[in-house]
Length: 313
Image (cartoon, rainbow, N blue to C red):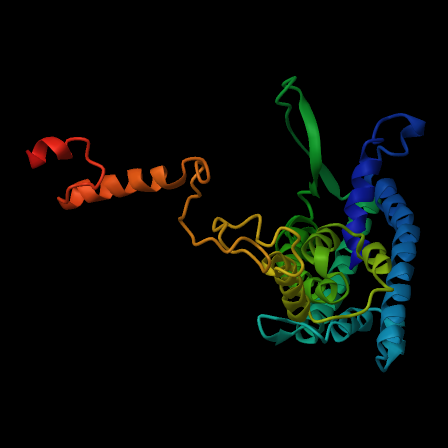
């Protein structure tokens, strides 16, 4: 299926040359069609070989059986789900998605072969009309595509050319895309946990699945949930080390709001007490002063009251 995903990219690039130059070669849609098919083939083969190598390498490293399945088209797609057996998607085994994906892929490939065969017949026989519409910028009529000629539009050949890709292949393509994403999520969760979502989307939306799988072929498979639990445990242990007095030279957690969490060997002064900065300077007078204040509040006559002699008289 990657071949027919890559073909529109190549055809759009070749469409840039659809002018009257080069003896009008690119002005003929039949020439653009078969040239696009021919140019896409070696690029697809290169990417597919990378996928085969990646699938076989992963299967060999993981000790999977039936590694021959990596070399057979469509079966190779199912085997991707087999290699992702350590993970599930919403409690559904990945090989269930990959099996459905392989079936839909087979139907889609057959449909595209049929559609392009009909397109080749129509282009070669000149049984088409150019569809035009006014340009937004210049207002001139510009070509935007092709449709079957009016003399064959009521036949099955014209219906296939006009509507088969637009409706049948488009709907099947949506189903294929959803199953493809689920399958790739399971595979990359197993062999590329940290970037699984990004790799899955790129591999599903662009025809580079083989290259991305080849990049992670030497990674060990793992369960994604166990991986995330291990990451959380590691972060928790790093956080906990700040609460260990033996490992902390400051004896307390410097990031804690409660600075009273001190370790051994630190000042054991009760929380909330403030040292007197005048200790040792006033001797007993300081204590008496403090005692006077307290005695005055209790209603008792302080022992050093300067008016004692007047009161006695």
